[in-house]
Amino acid sequence: MNKKESRRQRISRKLLYKYRLVVLNDDTFEERFSFKLNRLNVFVFSTLFAVFLIGITTLIIAFTPLREYIPGYSSTALKNKATSLAYTTDSLQQVVAMNEQYIASIRRVLSGDVTSVDFNRDSIIEAAKVDLSEVNLHASKADSLLRDQVEQEDKYNIFEADNKKNFVLFPPVNGTLTDAYDPNVKHFAVDIVAAKDAPVKAVADGTVIFASWTTDTGYVMIIDHGNNLISAYKHNSSLSKQQGDLVSSGEVIGIVGNTGELSTGPHLHFELWSDGYPIDPSQFIDFD
Image (tube, rainbow, N blue to C red; front, side):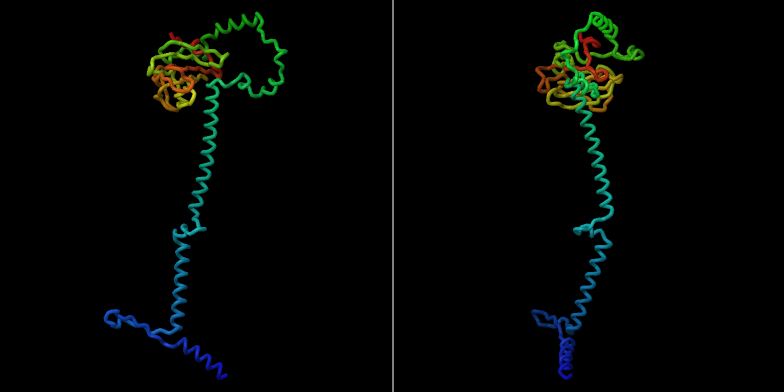
């Protein structure tokens, strides 16, 4: 018992033994201030100070925006914003994909990269089964006479009867017609040679649905005139209208140029499309 008590006394004496912490002036050795400490006081003070720091840090992390800078933490507002941005990005991707498909379809039609089968995709399989060697492709005399009669009657009729009196196509540029419309070589347009920097004009009132640069045909503008009629102007040196602009008949929309890899000189490559089919512009516009 005496040994145990003496041991406890030694431990208690060490914990309660008082020390004096003195702060002196280094030059004069003047005592500035001092503290009386023991090991027990230092242990208790250190423990309380550590608990205080832990509590303050916890409060800062839990109730202040500083927690967002700690890896692994994120605010509810930030998560909601990220979710909203993800939905917006997905919607924009769908819109961009649809616009790209629309523009690609227009370019394909205007470049002539279409066939008669393309206008009725449901008949592709049946058309592939037909043996053309067994089909009589020569028109009969009666059929030829009927075609000539219909062509003469509809020569200038590409609009409805109630609109054709008030709808006149304006010549897009003053110049000489060089290359005529020839669907056999997929030239669905007329080429008009004109002086460089001559103004290009809209053939009728309409809305610009495409105005941009292409590698093959340079600066291109496409105008929707209503009545399922579309006009295209290619190889311009510059354009004065943008997509979505409204234009009037005879209004300047660009300047004749020699742009694009398929151009061989200053001229205007002009196309007309009605109901998705190319038509001969010279049948409806007087270029002389």
